[in-house]
Length: 302
Image (cartoon, rainbow, N blue to C red):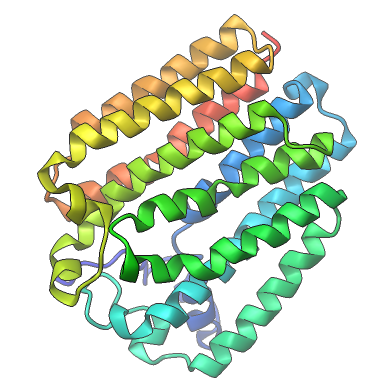
C-alpha cells in the first residue's frame, strides 16, 4: 500500500470534482498544518491581552482574523511549496499524489490560485496595525524561500521553525503595537518546538529523501534524532515558561504548561523511529500540545 497523508475519502470527496485539486493543493484535507501555523499567533494574542477574561472586542476580532488567515496563508505556503517541489514530489512515495506532481492541476492554474490566496491574506493583514502589517509582509520572504532549503541545507526544519512561528511576533504586535520580550521568547520557543516535531515528520520520508538527494534534519541526525528532539523540546518549553513568567502568568497557568511539557515527553516515549505511521501520528499530536499551551494562556490570570 502506498504511504500517503492525503485523505481521499473525507469531506473533499463530497465537493464538486473541479474543486478537488485546489482543496488538496491547500492541504484542506489535513488541517494539522493550519493548527500548527495558527497556534503560536493565538498564544501571543491571548498572552498579550492578559488572558481570557481580559479579552476585548478587538482581541476577539484578532483571534478570528488569525484563524481565517492561518487557513489562507497555510494554503498559500503549500501552493508555493508544491510549485517548487513538483518534480521532487513525483519521486517521493508520500507526495507523488499531490495535484501538481500528479498532473491534476497545471502550474499556471496553481499560480493564479496562489495570487488569489495572497490577495486574501493581504486583505486580512490590512485589518491590523502597522507593526503587524510590516511583520506580515516580512514573513512572505520566509514563506517563499522555505521550499528551497531542503536543497541547500540539512536543516530545512529550522527554516520552517523561523517561518511557521512568525505569528507569535505578529500576534503580539497586533495587540500591543510593539514586539515585546515575551513575544521573542514565544517565537524562539516555537522555533525549537517546530524543529522537534518537523524532524519527527521528516522521518516518514527518510529513505526516499536519501535516494533523491533531499536534505533534512531527520537524515542529519539519524538514530540520534530522539535525544536531539528531546533537547529541542526542553529548550522550547523553558523559553515558553519564560514568556509566561515575563507576562506575569499565575500558578494555575504554569501548572497547565507543565501538563503541556508532559505531553512532549509522551511524544518522545511513544514515537517508534523508523515507522512512518508512528511519525505521522506523533507529529499530528502536536495540535494537542499547542491547545494545552493556548489553554495556559487563557488561564494566565490564575
